[in-house]
Amino acid sequence: MRKVGLVVLLAVLVLPLASAETYRISGQATYSDNTPVMLRDIFVECRPNEVDCYKFRGERAITDANGMFLVNIEVDEDDDGTEIYLQLRGENFSHIIDLETFRNTSQGWMTQNIQLEQDNTGSGFFRGLGCCMVLFGLVFMSTLLRTVSGLATPKGRRAFQGFREPDRHDCPVCGESVAQHNLVKHFIFEHDYDPMDAGEAAGLVMRKSWSKEQE
Image (cartoon, rainbow, N blue to C red):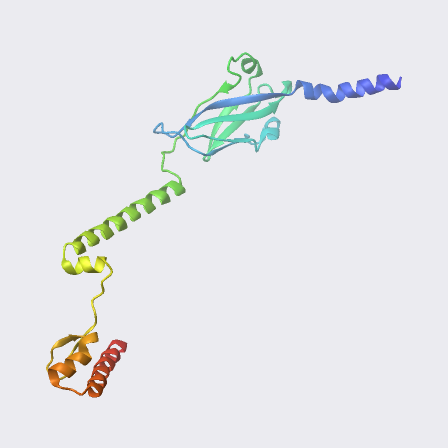
């Protein structure tokens, strides 16, 4: 008697599981201009007060690079004729669960293509990426043009090779523009300064220049 009761209990528990099956809905999602909806989530939603549909809410799939998707939900005989929504980017698309048609399909899924009413404006990520690419291109072209323009002159070619023009100062005696590293030599050979005096004079000229730069 105990064995009979155990068998009946197992049958009651297993029967609902045996009657459940995976119901598949597949298709392509496109925008109004027929471009594919790439890498977007499709959610199962329900019409308000559609109680039979609630157990399917939250099931989801994601479209691939061609907009193709495959939604899987677990159904049983009582779900036949239940209406669900396939929600994509805020737009809902009705689907009626049809078990008889599903079981007779050769491909193993119900085909339902989705076309949004909205245009393909592109995701924020791709718009941002496009702006970054345009900005990078403009900066690159500007840098390239400046480099080419600089290389057209001897001074620009020297700068490109790492040569830096020395600082120059006006000689307080003759007014000639002299490279900073030649100031001491200029005072000695051009104005007969004593080496010590030439060093002090050069230092005074450079200190005046630094004071002007700080101002």
